[in-house]
Image (cartoon, rainbow, N blue to C red; front, side, top):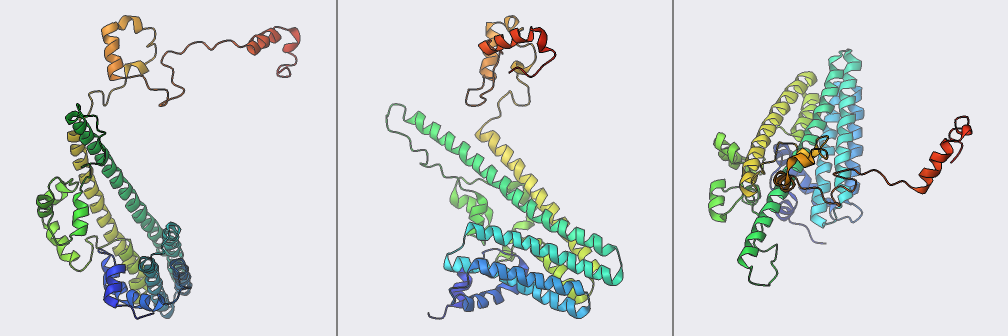
Length: 389
């Protein structure tokens, strides 16, 4: 097996955008370690993930001791654990043997490593100083780490949901237009024809050095769910482009930087509480910025959906056929009013709600019900109630 090219491995395995800690302090080491590890077939991404977990647990062991030398060793082991955690994904991209289970395993082990290291680091300092603030710091670290990643997953889920809704409505509109144009023709309309929706975030990801307005002009009809944010903060585009030239993403204080400052910087400088407090405030501020940006994106989404699919007039009202006594007032409504209600509030199809009955009818009396009534009329029923079936 020939020697791998470092430049080629970096281009293939490194992400186009990543945290500044990873770009500056991890990738240069991880890619060189990857070249040596890729030669051995028994080294798989999942095994590297397990190794990262064990090294992280070793870091927790030294954190628990609490003395300055042990804290320095624990910080070094934690950084090595994070490097291995990056190598497993790079190895999967290099060899093409990544699995869905491996991605889940990587995520779960990351959370386990943070939990054990936070408890060990703060617990070790509490045992040495008996300062209760370290216990609160441990809770804060675990909570903020979980909040960061859960919020990131939920925002990603909501963004994918908005994209799918836009694509669905656009597909329906274009299909309807094609059907109107081809009413006289009998050729089937291909629903995928011309229905591809282009999003500005995809174009920016593929062309990190090009401005959004230029990409809009070049690509024509582009869906932009970040227009309000860029309009309110025009400097953000220049700031983002300057960082992306070095593959650094604009989110400067993410979960990665938060972990590194808590478990590497703080033990090395010996200021664990102050470093934890500053890192927590910085992470919280950046999370608020992300939430604000997402809120503006939802407003852009709402305006776009109103153009693609106007809101029906019944939105925000309760259908009259859901009120009590609707069957008794049916005669008072009149035929015209009744037809209008049916048009605006159609009765659900059977497939929509199998148990829905707009006008409930008495249940038919079965033979066994009649027999039960006759049995209940007998004198011994009260004495032996429930014994007759």
